Image 1: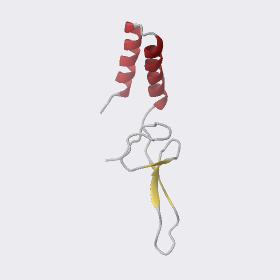
Image 2: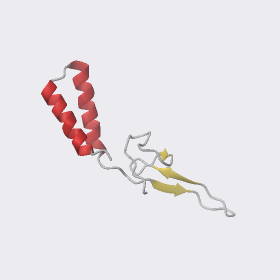
Image 3: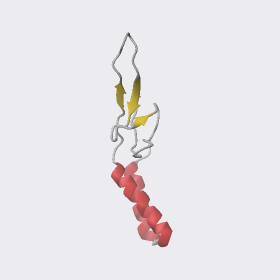
Image 4: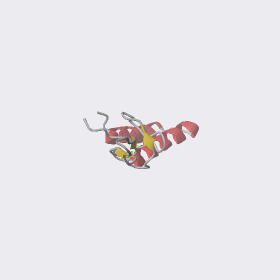
Length: 87
């Protein structure tokens, strides 16, 4: 499993030690900011319609923004939040 805190520390070190300039510095800074804002992974939310005559429809939603996600997605396509699946 990837240690998010170690990745953040590594990016901070690279930015400081190598004094990137221009687009490179902006790109690394943006990546670092996104990673910090993301936080820990959210568990997906199971949603669905009420059953009528024994039939219903069920799907998964991002635990942060509630947009639909597919089973097994590692990140939400809408907000980029990491998804934590059990098992």
